[in-house]
Image (cartoon, rainbow, N blue to C red; front, side, top):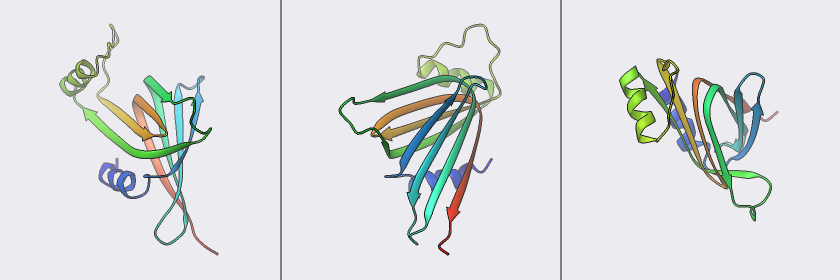
Length: 132
C-alpha cells in the first residue's frame, strides 16, 4: 500500500478537515470521509475504508458542535505477528484465542473528537475536485 503517500496526505491535507463517520455493522467496516481544500483552492476528499475492525472508540465533548473537525490523523501499519502482539500489549487490548492477522492497521484521529480504529484491512483514496 502507499503508506508514504498516505502519511503525506495526513500531514498536509487532513489538518482542519471536516470528518464524516459511517459504521456498517453487516460488513464490519468503518468508512471515514475527510473533506478539505488544498493550496490551489480545490475541494479535496479523502476516504478511509477500515474493514474487519476489532476495536473502535469515539469520544466527543457533548458541548461541541455536531460536526467533527480533524486536528491530527495518524495511520500505522503493523506487520508480523511479534509486532502485532507487542502493539496489542502496549494498547492493553486482548485478542483472546483468535488467530492474529499478519497485518494490523491502527488509525488515530484527534481534534473535535478522538477516534481510534484497529482493523485488519485498510484502504484509502484521494479525490480532488478540479475547478471547471
